[in-house]
Length: 345
Picture 1 (cartoon, rainbow, N blue to C red):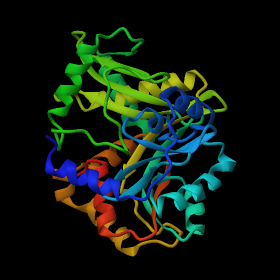
Picture 2: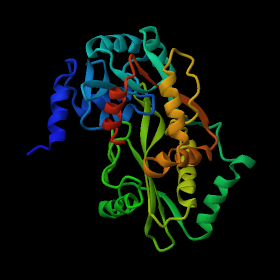
Picture 3: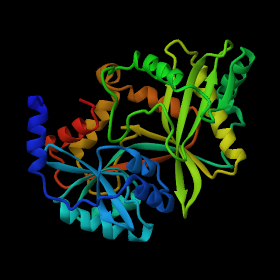
């Protein structure tokens, strides 16, 4: 029998504005991503379960629904010049939906439609081949790799030769030290899978005795049917792993991508970092709330380690690209719906 919470959610979602949903298959969504998926969340919009899709055979906007409100995830997956038209159509159909983790280009379109646009955080980009790990500022990154090799660790790309139960054990071990252990976050992050999706890449670190210590999974970025880059999708490491493990493994993966001629690697969203004025009409209330949340010891200790995640990504000295969140009203109830959608509460 469904819980009271699930029953109420269903009732509220049934009361949300009726949006025509495009029934795209997984194969059709991936085909569109291969043509137009040049931003960090594009692959996840196609691969994540329990999302809905607005659009047609030429492109889509992925969205989730919670507590009577619709929330678009990322930019539209469509030919970039056509994105403004898709945004306008979705806004009209969905009755003022929120847009979460969007680019400046999408933010400008929404601002012209009367939306408030706040900064949500930063996405760290490593443009290749120009970005490398030479120089004094990257000395600690190089040291982590040297330390691991000296101690007998080994790096490799997983060509689907690692037993899935070994990966499952590592993931379960990793979850044991998470702030929230009972579930994984959603929407902005999709649940981890032991197996790789199509076109994904996985790099692993093994200890001196051959045990699996850490892994990094990457989603592809596309343009015109070709892979142009990768974005960090998942990371797992043993709870007792050395602090050098994740740093050294990230360097190893980025170096391999550079050698292959890949043009960019992104490290993904660092939420609520550098929440400054967005340059658009915005909510001062939510700007201040985001700033306080990032600085809150309680939030970082008991909800999500925002500061630790940002500090890790800044070790690699990439270009920090602002990402945005946009809404018409920005009420507390709407924000509560988003927090429940991402499973932050």
